[in-house]
Length: 192
Image (cartoon, rainbow, N blue to C red; front, side):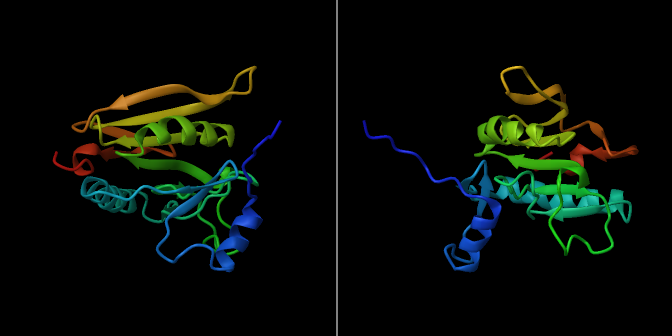
């Protein structure tokens, strides 16, 4: 019997591949569960939503936390995704020593159109397993915000979130890390 198995990479091996020039400069990849995943190209609605969201969050959290866009987050030895946006705790070195870990993350955000199913299933599971307390998906397919909280792991080892709330583009949502701050979604979703 001929068994075939895929090579799973650690973060150290993944970084070494990058140092050796394995990836082209414009390659958009991330490490998820030891697999090198090609990140989907962004269409105009995704880019517009990202720009608007970054602008609104930057204004809201001004100095209270750090906003990072498409930068690595270390979830485990085998997962280093680059979410669209992440709000992390302030650090004096601005994460120069190492990328943020789950304990640094206040809110992790993906903007999804062509990657929606992947973000709702694979990434959601990875984020929940890492203990990311709040995960948002700006669902551009259905035009609403999916807010996930309360990560869990069941007896079979499957990870997910106990709570999922939906917010429409004409509503506002409180930032989980700063309950006194509300995000007006009409200023974020494209075409609203």
